[in-house]
Image (tube, helix red, strand yellow):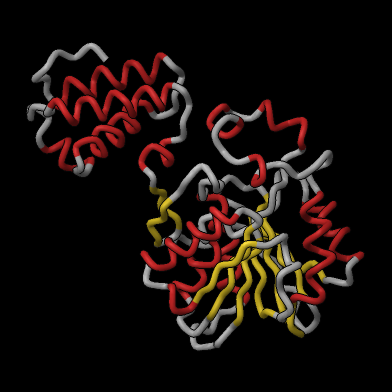
Length: 301
């Protein structure tokens, strides 16, 4: 950044937008507003209401550091330390995958499978990360209790923090463990967004992902299906009679994962597409659930 001392909000936004655009960053003006609002400790709306306001030197220095990190493809969520998901505001860190809007299709599928908000369901989130999936369901189902499990202790600790900050700590618990090895309980609903990227494909992902998000949350083995093999093998013991699992899929993985589920004695019960039309949320049942297909995104909540 070459803005002189005393430059205005408008000047910083203009120059930062140009720099980000030149670096082929998507939505450069939007990201410039996000980063400058963060540096100033204010909102994007406040920036736009007062573009002639001077940017103090301390905020300008913070903005310059944030911009430098973004040009190195550090995800915006890591720079801000926060990410919105469903109705929640979540802390994020390099120890966890950043929650994405596509994963909200799993929440929609889970809520449709358990439509009664007064029903006291038991929920398990395998590979909980930030706790996004579990906490979103708990926020909509006030009689539910859930456990989030993650192989990374740092992730389990972050999810517990997010539960506290969103007022859900009294109905949740978070543990570090290898998939379901630490559990000896049955659940009505099991959620999971497992690692599903083929190992050799990780290096070719967008730099924001390949260089800055944890390999533990991305690497699905040689064919992308290692985690699904472990999860589908464990689900018959984890699901209560009539229980439901909702698993996030990578593009084109539905048939393979349904095959693994059938081999474990589970019943595929439909798949909900994300907002891009990709089959994303696979629903599996352990007996007693009518096969009601999930074929597209639900109306905005």
